[in-house]
Amino acid sequence: MSSTEILEPLSTPWHLRGNWAPVLDERTDTDLRVDGRIPEALDGLYVRTGPNPYSGHSPHWFLGDGMVHGVSLKGGRAEWYRNRFVRTPNITDPLSDPMVGMGDLSRGTGNTHVLAHGGGLMCLEEGHWPWRLDDHLETTGVENYAGALTCSMTAHPKICPVTGELIAFSYFNFEPPHLRYLRVAADGTLTQLEEIDVPNLVMMHDFNVTRNHVVFMDLPVCFDLGQLATGFPFVFKRDAGARLGVMPRNGTNADVRWMDIDPCYVFHPINAHEDGDRLVIHVSRQREAFGTGSNDYAEVARLWRWTIDLNTATVEEQQIDDRPADFGRVDDRLIGLPARYGYLMSLDGEGNAEEPVYGSSLYKYDLTTGECWEHHLGPGVRGAEPVFAPASPDAGEDEGWVISLTHDTGTDRSSLQIIDARDFAGPPVAVVHLPRRVPYGAHGSWVPRGLLA
Ligand SMILES: [Fe+2]
Image 1 (cartoon, rainbow, N blue to C red):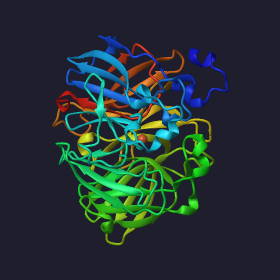
Image 2: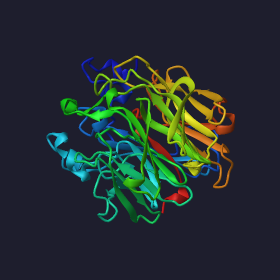
Image 3: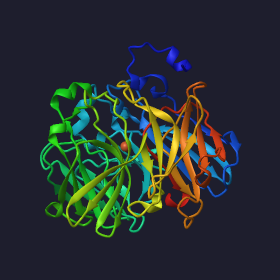
Image 4: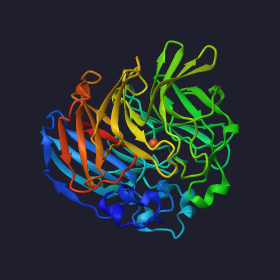
């Protein structure tokens, strides 16, 4: 039990307890203490966001204000650590009831993902517009592509490594058609915005992109007004069924081919690619999500492969491993392309309906064979999403490092682990000691310095 947990009453919701509890100060620390050697080739910024309510309280984990934590690596040094709130109207002009702001696209929290596109950082959350940050993590404004984006945008767009375009969707639309599809060119021009028919308003947290196709996931975590008071109005409804929708990347609603699959839930795919007339998708699949309500995390995900036959419009579903794991990533240079290696975070707490439990291991999978290598973070140490940083722009697929935040529940301290991707089970090449506890959060990125204009 950490020191923060000792001081908290048991009535405190799980998302405000222990290392889920927000940190309220913003700080900047330079020349961080490092064990081992930071590779000189790492020149850029590790960034990660997560819910961190400015007031100290939020009605649901998903509704907390975004806070971004960043570590700048340069010349073999950990140049600085910074943490900053995403400065939105929710902080500068708060509403007495945050639910009132759900329909205002400029009230996004930026609490789910942070990545680089269009020469700068973008902080995202799926019910609103993204936010722009500068390379010191200061919020510079909302991003709606000069007014062309007239709906919310997913927190999990894909940046195509071939074209540089951002490929995304929007599901949080109360009036049918509930789904939108959109593309943004590398220069920030919104080039396509299409309405897509889906039968229900479902929580579509992520999707899949290959070189020529996108694949939507219509999975039955359905909008339910009866859950509105919980702050998260969605519940699993198996009878609603589940479908994958395949569409050419430049297609429209008329081009979507829907294919039934077994009802399940997927928060995060790892990657997708084309193999002749087949699309191969690796996902962290769980039997259901939010089955008993908005704080039900009893079900955990495992690595599965979906193989879509474009000729027969059928989907083969195959479990690859039995280890619970999610937050999977590949080398960003291979998004939508055949990637051999996927990096995932283990999950503990299966059957524990109270809160998600980030695991003590990271996994490297050979997605072609199912072989798995484990990096154990240490007893009582909990991980985060692993991201891959290549040794150079043209380095081989696993020629580089896997970077992840960790929290030691024994000491209540956080660190940044840098692991050689080719010696994955070995000790980290460097551990950057962070000057403060970093709460468990959501997603992040390794941003090579050249991607920041
Ligand atoms: Fe996510």
